[in-house]
Length: 639
Image (cartoon, rainbow, N blue to C red; front, side, top):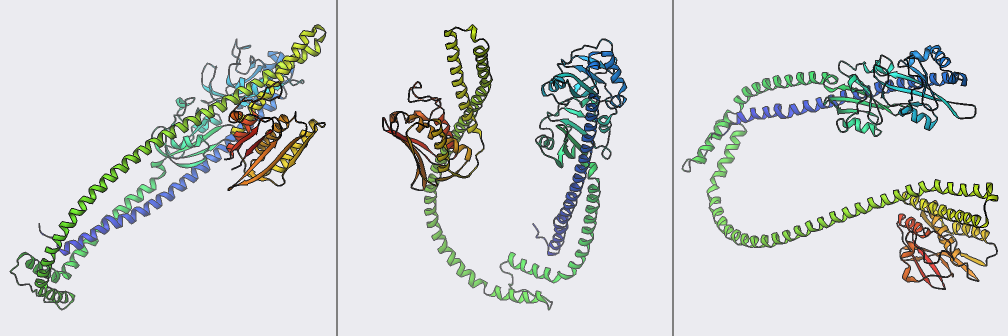
């Protein structure tokens, strides 16, 4: 294959510049211009959708306030007389102009009293099944509904504004409502027909992705698909702003999102990218035409200039090529010019003169090197084989470690999920049991106070036992709720003076039984870093435990202090009470675990479990040491 000439190479270099470097510069410039235009369009889109959202908020507030204002003029005579109610509705022309799908008055049970649509046979119709009716009755506040299919003959999608009307005694008397047809040219319908540029449009959806407003009316009431528009999915989760995305129809667009303040609705504006960035496409075409024409002109000029400049160099190259291809050829070259090429030829001739001697010496050195290389290659092959075996063994060990770690992670995740479910179940059950227990206590109190004369002694005794049992059950439920809250509460890390907490709790305990002979020994200035509320719960449980289980000791002593053990501070609460068998030490921190008879020492068996959970959440440890009949000591660390 014939070598490429220097002249051709120079031309190729110029081509490379115009094919790679120049287009690169143009591409960077165009990308910068595109980014600037995109940012500008995105900012404009967000400003537009923000202004539209603010206008919608104002119109919604105006519509709701108009409905609330009119509801204040509705009295019991209007509510009780459908004819007067209908007359009242038709006299409110401003409401009829706002609510183009009708104005309605419902009873407190959700049945229709009067309406502006005057459809026969509808008076008394039950609308309590409607979502807006349930929410209004449940909350007692004005409600703006999600879209629903109207019961009017047109069966259009609609939304309902409702306002509760209360009597003088505070009871719900009626519900006043106004409905807007999403297909009519009201403030929502007109916005759905608005355009951004030629093909851009607005969309309004609820927080649960239901379409309220869309230029395609068939899409209203449909659910906005998940995953089809990534930026919309992000906006549903709280994002407000603008950016590039792909719409549910697969169109690349610059979209902006803004959440309304009055209701949980999301307003979005979609501007097709090909229309928004039309100036970019025109700039691209113009720039590439300039690059192409400039490249052709530059290559032509360089071709002529280089042809004149490199002719001597081509002659020099041809002579060298002859020397290389023919060993018997004269190794001297001749150049007729007086420039740098002649100097290069002189140096070349000097180099060629000593080349033979160097080649001879090089052959001798090569022979010696080949021998040494062969020996070293054999050694390297043996070493490589050993290393490959070692690498193979390490890879197998590493793969086994990865498998073990993955299994451990799966088990940890499963355990964490189970714990969360158990905590949620415990909280839900305990929370739901509180109301029935309160009802039981209330009914017992009614029986014992209002019907005491009808109860014999045995019945009264049984009721008191039921009351005591329900009281204990209420305490147990509260303890379970506290344990659940401890597991979910956010921990604050602040300095906590445990000595001050111990002194405060000791004072409260003395007030409960002022005649008990108990002395407290509290070390000063024991300070840890943790959550003040949770650490108060720890100290209260441990101090109350010491107080309870030293109740039968003649001279009870309760101590609190801390000692330094290694690099950590170990706090303790110690008493000289009844103690316990160390064989059961691990059980006492379990939920509902008790080591002593509940008839002698009251308790729920949750306090120490709560202490352990709080300490673990602080990154610490808790344990106990005791001797039966001599007392117990509870130790704990914090972080």
